[in-house]
Length: 134
Image (tube, rainbow, N blue to C red; front, side, top):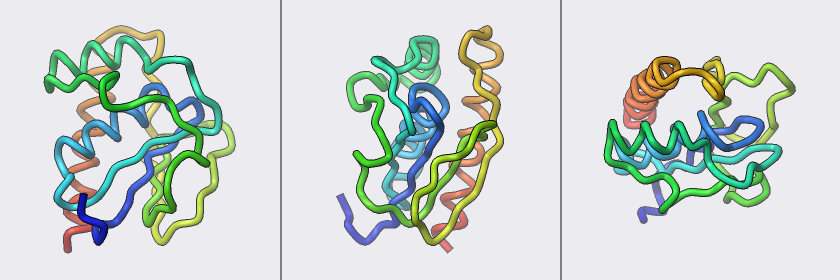
């Protein structure tokens, strides 16, 4: 792992769906540009199973092998904080750059909603990588 890369934290309340997808796609698409972490203010016993299944189908990534639900206090200090679109008070972490991606939580909805969110996260990871790379 390159310690000079900026560290990016993807945060939402439960750290079981959107932020986990973002961590997985950050590692998959941009590990040469930034280090990806995800965390929440509360944790769930397991990652959202629809997210796990669809990420396996679409990218061949098994999030359960490499990731688990973590609290903000479980991750190292970060340079960038990306909130997923918390409609409650967003977790606050000190950082140099912060943005909110405003993504609605697909939990409990159909695969189509999940795919929309996964695709949106994919595009936003690529945009973030361009920003951080320049």
